[in-house]
Image (cartoon, rainbow, N blue to C red; front, side):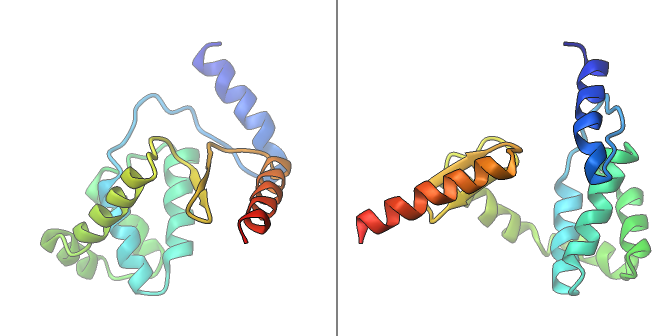
Length: 147
């Protein structure tokens, strides 16, 4: 299956959810976006900023590794671009990202999304709601057995 076919299939599945994926031909380094997300978290705007970055990257096919793109997204979300720029220059959120990386390493996470249930069970990739329900049901049964 070529890339065009993959995007067609992905967009067909995403359409009922009101989502659209632009045809990305190059990956971005997400470090700036991740640090900016931590900044947004501290400002109480994590979810809205996360959604904005998601849309910029996956739908609008923008480079979220580009500082100007990130500063524009922060400003569009009502946050102070100068304050973010200072935080990025200081690498204020680098330790949070490192802690998250270490935790991911502990769980052998090598793909996103990955979901960890009760610190034991791992779900990798975008799965159906039914698959999640089944995994939670299995984990609940296993938890009862352990008790």
